[in-house]
Amino acid sequence: MVFNSATLRAIKPGALRGWGVGWLLFWVTLIYHPVLGYDFVFWDDNINLMLNPLLHQDWSWSGALGFFWGADGSVRFKPLHWLLLRVWHGWFGFEAWAWHALGFILHGSSAVLAYVVVGRLYRRLFPVAGSRLADVVALLGVTIWLAHPLRVEPVAWVTGSAYPFATVFTLGSLGLYLRSVEAAGRRRRWFWIGAWLMAICAYCSYSITLTLGLFLMVLDVLWLRIAPACWWNPRHPESRAWWGRHLAFVLPAVLALAVTLMSKGLSGGRFPKSQPLSAFSDFGERIETGAASLASFPLKLFFPFDLTSFGSPVLDRGTWIGIGILALVVLPAAFWLARALRSQIAGLASFYVGFGVLALPCLGLTEVPIMPPDRYSYLVDLVLVGGLGGLLLFNHARFFAGWRWVAGGVCACVFLLCCLSSSRLLPVWRDTDTLFTHMTAGDSLGLPMQRTLIYRNWSYYAVSKGRPDEAAAHVSKALQIYRDEILNLVIEGNQRRAVYFTKCQLEDYGFTFFRHVTPLWWCENLGLSDADLPRVQRIFDTVGDDVEIIKQLCALKCPPPTVPDTYTTELIVP
Image (cartoon, rainbow, N blue to C red):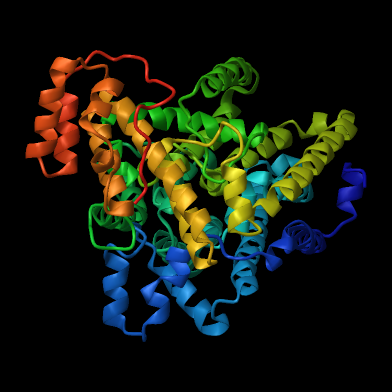
């Protein structure tokens, strides 16, 4: 099909949108239908489903409310998602195919809603291009988004269903908000109320949606340009009314954020208290890692290579090189756009302002800023793809007249590459052994904390399958990683991180390796002399708490020698 004006005028808008919905559902089914034959994985599926008291106990509102607000609630405030899991369990039990079908259905729903919302936004922002062309560009962008390999994790991983579930409500809120802008009278008020209710549902679905209210403010100021001219002046009556409407969206998000942050500090739940938010609490470090994470989202979107299920550290050499390349490309492009488009640059640049606003929860506001996994990009990539589509529409006379074959060929090649990459990545989630084998293959395994979690969970899975020898080997590997990392941290004098890893090991196993190595081992591997041996021995004899032992070992302030490849004492696994 040739995308020229005559062809598009021959298609009725309603028919085009109907065919677009069918097109999206076809590709969702074709690409992701293998997940219906996959099993649960011991990568939080066992905690969130099989061991979840909300799914096993008799229903009571008091018990459910305690679960939602307590430490058992996955250290995030997402009551609607927990209710969805409760209902799904009531219908299907623990049939793996049904739980994978849930993610499958939610992803298809998100794609359809994204097509509707992005198309409506395009028709308002670029009326010169025509409604049919706006729908076609929206369809192409959403098709590439749904097929991108970054979508594999939230679709194939049962626990990851919270991301498309929250996205459904977010897109629903955006769509109704756009309708409220276009409507008049009572219909305008009812559409606004519907948008507000959908936003509340989004906040109660998962914490990645908590900046939706800020995103709507960007929408008003930069995209729709319906904010008062003096919106920043609170004394102006129109400005006060505008702020009042948006505070209705922002304040519930602040409440949900407070509950999320408080739940991360609660103990006694199914998840350990020492979450990454408490481990990396240094403000400067969080800003640095958050900025690198922000750059990693577009890098993964345009260069989807070496994807993992949880992401690798963003502060490595490769990422910073990527940030430099991205800056070299984006800055000249932004300068050219500013000169060429002038008044239109605000509308296009605001797509990326909105991207940054929506990405805030995944940059450390609620999520882990040091290891952005694939699922973090589920919602924010829609803004990036929408910005590229907006650029095409703004230059529609060039791209769809003289360059239509080039534009169509590029879109087709990108879509084909996304399909092939997703098809290769999808089988990784077939079962626990396949997933963990993939995670531990190669050198890009991620941070030590994630490596220990992998081997710990792998040992649980091996025990559940009656493979005790394999479970013992995985436990030994996890303890060895703990030992190496804690030793390095003590050598560096990094007491905060060393204490954190010690607490994590105590929470995971109830003991540390300290009691199974001798003070001589510490002296030799820390580079201490024989004269320091009595001091180390005294620490072990007089201090009963393992965390305090680490603090005193860090206080020795020994010179940082090179960590030897082999150790003088082998680790004993009890």
